[in-house]
Image 1 (tube, rainbow, N blue to C red):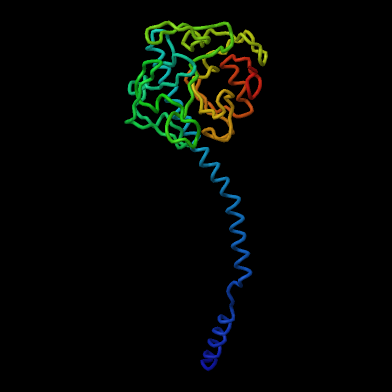
Image 2: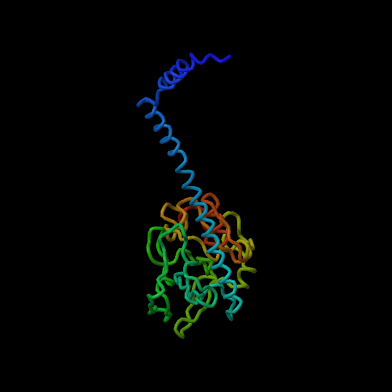
Length: 269
């Protein structure tokens, strides 16, 4: 039979035990906060790299659209040229819009602040071309506001005996480079022997048409201010594919495409 006289005592004892439980001390709380801070410090760089990797993939998608536009442009060009450049310093993408690309955001990398203004136009006094100003100029790095994120490579074979004659404002101009066309990218053989490439036929799958902008200018080499920093660059090739070229393989891939007699970061002028 249950002894009812002991119930109040047991209840009281139970209450006493619960009241004896304690919370975190200040030191324990500080230790927990310190552990959380350390974990956050370890995770934030990983999350940052994951975010940048996603932007790199989106950038590659943009670059593929630009590359495919150039292939369609070549099919319609009388000389089969991939880009409408009159020389190696001409960066005009206006002929691609809107016939081949109707979304201006395609011309800018999501890892940059670059953008194209749809209402700012200009005319080039040298070429006579007119169009959107920001489709005529490279933005100049990831922190720049206006201009193109992608560098065109419509010419190759710098400093070789080869040349191409082009029309500029009705006059014939001799450009000391080989223009990249359906024919030249398929048949061209290396003049220089850098990386033992003399006589090599690179072909469309190894000849560049576009890359992420290279802040180093003539050096054409990844550095901190480029679209994706100094890790490497997305590159669009003449067969239509886009691939990531890392820093270690950048110069060889560039030389395979361009035949500039280059084996180092800079150029031997």
